[in-house]
Image (cartoon, rainbow, N blue to C red; front, side, top):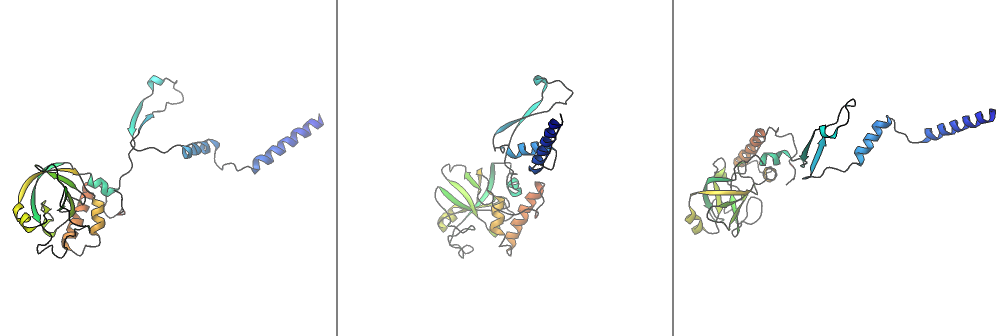
Length: 237
């Protein structure tokens, strides 16, 4: 009897020693287990539909038919300037258009370069200049009657700010003069990026028209209910 008690006491001491040497969590085991499950859970995938079921109270019998549930599709978070770009409602509109060329007096210092530093385009894809606070850089559109031509906003001009006018690039002065001023119907097939517009203009704020476009983009942020100046302007799109 005495020996059996000694053996039992020895086992208890050995077990206590073993447990004390283990790296046990310093919080309740249930909390620790839940946290480990969350860490090991697979991340939500964008574009995938998930179902959420409402849990029942512990005193309510389990009846699957009475469990309320709903579904949602997970979407990746969008930077504030991307959200502001999505404020555009209309893809079809009527706009005033003019034309410009690379060798006219107010553009000759830039030559064939546009505001993003690449060559002006004239082909199936053609360059256009606009107020970037209204038509941000990268905006692509078609003009009614020209189904095989896509215009892309990759330039801006001081005379365009606040007017809503789009300036279409032409490779010669004769073509520029032939276009003149026209009110046309356009279809926007892709809105550009306010974030990229801000990135390109942030080192050019000594120019009044650039500052005006920056202020216009900040106004878009206020419309979206987002505080301007409190978020990083970083690449996202």
